[in-house]
Length: 404
Image 1 (cartoon, rainbow, N blue to C red):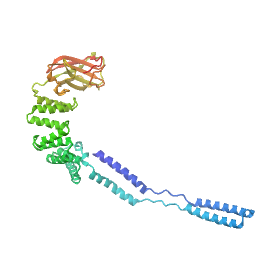
Image 2 (cartoon, rainbow, N blue to C red; image 1 turned 45 degrees about the vertical axis):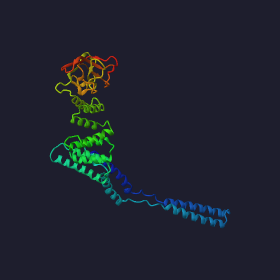
Image 3 (tube, helix red, strand yellow; image 1 turned 90 degrees about the vertical axis):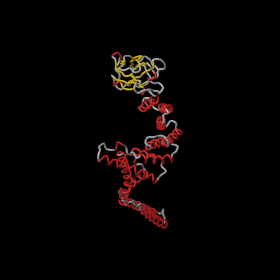
Image 4 (cartoon, rainbow, N blue to C red; image 1 turned 90 degrees about the horizontal axis):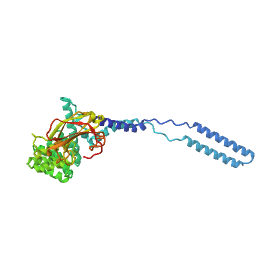
């Protein structure tokens, strides 16, 4: 928030300076006209002398001489008048400059508070870490910004994004009833946005004591009808299926959600655990393997500290798609590891579906998930699923490119 206001102040100052400079600048003094007039008079005298010489020489009659003198006089008068008449430049305007200096910054700040979104500037890390009165003051400031947003939406009630932001702000402040009302308005204005309906369902369930059945589930169904891949909608649908004891429906929703996530993400690991629970995998006998990975002197070279270290379990027979994958860095060696179903790449291809597996540890300079020539590698197995204390020594190199 502080950075935003500093940048805003710098922009306002720059704009004000650009406007005030022409108003406060003094005009440059104009060049004096006297030398130019003297030059015109000298030219006039030279031409008069030339006329006199022509008159005495007989090449110019007296009548023509008089007419020429009159013409020279008129030209001298016209040119002298034109050379001394210059447009006046406006001088400094300190009064107008003072008005702009006072009005411009205030107008810019008021315009932002009216049309902008001050709540978007607030972040959780803007609050002081200390407890007590400082924390309470920061909470009051946040409440004030949320109330400003609510006031703006009362004046411009057709802003769907504004209502969604207000609803999320109320959720952070744990004002769930207010959040539900704001989400209802946002959904009314943007009924085709699946994510809004999922968020609305989540808040409705909170207001309803955590129960998804009824109005929350109606919003979830509409969200998934709009977007079958909506993550929160799938998670809420799976939770509702679990509440009513429909394990097959819960498994279907969890599997769908798992396929949408990066396999090595923490969220995917949590979804895999939920999927295992829905399938009835007993917690007392988890499918896992623990052990230690070390780097042998026989590896032939020392890896860089930032090289990627993969530890994974493979089926003894069949496709070489890993059943579980752990990713670390070479600097972590020697490494204690645990492989389990939460690290599966696919919910239908897990450790718990095998009796024995092969274990590999590989160091990749490129970070590629596929083995490449020159990677350092070590293997162990076959190893029974559930084994503990397995040791893998990285003692060789990948001689040719292979595929998993």
